[in-house]
Length: 270
Image (cartoon, rainbow, N blue to C red):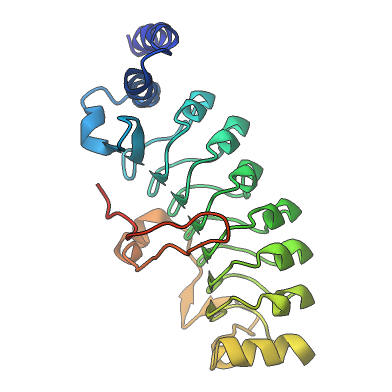
């Protein structure tokens, strides 16, 4: 029955291309149907902009496990919430969401950084906390407008040298990861105002990187995990989503980027 519904929605989606809101609505309905969700209205999880197209979509905590390529048709989407879902990967077409400014993928099941995110060139804020990421790819450097990166509570062991191209970065949270070193290029990020390196394995940081860490994150050194057991304050490192829900609330703001000036506040969860 679910497969038949998804097929019908696909047919209707193709037929509705000329009607923008109808097309957006059918796309969202198709995503819901693929994930076995049939009792949720599109209006309850989305908001439209002045043109009537969907600008905000909140799929957080909906047990979404599949993100289909068709999501790329939501080409005026600015705010996308996918947190607290068992999402393991994203389609290549996800990178075509080139109007997205804010993306929340916290508390999902990602174990590698989706390169498609690096193609979202207008992205200014990214939340990928509480996943199982081990590293960032060199393509990370393509996110030239990124102003805030929340990447705490992962398993990240290193940063690529291409981090130097994130010149608009203001807030960087890399706490509670497995970092044992930092690339020298990170010290060139002049816009950084807030840095959190607490709870990593930066036990032998020296020279320029140490001086940079001292200035950006005073007190970081005493929080590093240097024992063999890999514990933090007596607790075994955990990436289970169930233990992290209480940490979802945090303040974010939009950077006035070099190319786009955006007024207002990040919208609250719908």
